[in-house]
Image 1 (tube, rainbow, N blue to C red):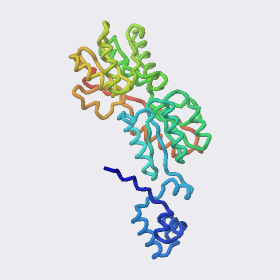
Image 2: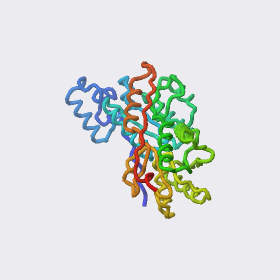
Image 3: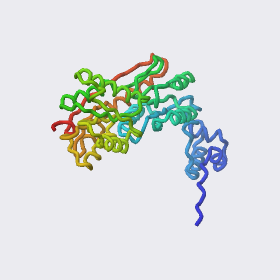
Image 4: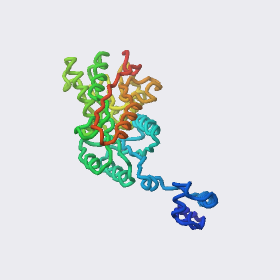
Length: 339
């Protein structure tokens, strides 16, 4: 059995030949229909329909001298946190008829750079980026070439780059303080690499909360660096922690996906939550309150985060770069109380 080759996409030249007009006439029908007679316009529109012709958005924008597409590079679009952020961006852009393209870096600086290059080649007006590392030199270079840049979910290390972030030091502090108040003094932090600023800042917050409580982090905190910031990573780390002689009495997870993996493992191993081990997540994504044991989590204003980033990007480089920092809040549920 043979498979038919994909049909070649019709071009403006194809439409012109089919309608027996010039390419310029087709362009006028698409962009300046008032310059074309009714009969000619109907003939061109019929050819467009017959050939299933779809005009090129970027080409049309370039001819008109306007660009209405922007890009966003996040760490992992499969994470509901970034999905909610992207929705906030999209809702804001829609009010001004802009289109969003989204890509995942998977925490890989090389992958991030490739997507930024593709976005630039596509001619986007600007990009919103959750950087995979602390290095932003490539983003400064992108801005210098005329592409707007806003750092997303990350404070800016330089005044030139606008940014929208949440105070992750405060978020880590809220989580650890809550656990200490629940009588948990052997805390494991299931974290990501410190090259990701959010991970480093949340750790700083945990250490601050322990110091404030008079607890030496060297004795009361164990940090586990995960290979992947998802449920699978949470499962692997939790199994390793349960095998320790000094099993922790609380798990603070760098995000809710990691917490989901931790909860699954604890349930599978017959560990009572929160009686034996309390669990706190981060982000307060949509499923957090719907789990069998509802998850305590540090809430971030995801939709507002995306909206504000889009606001700053659309403001353009003419305005002084703004640096917006939202405050997180702790949402307490059954996974961390009692026991």
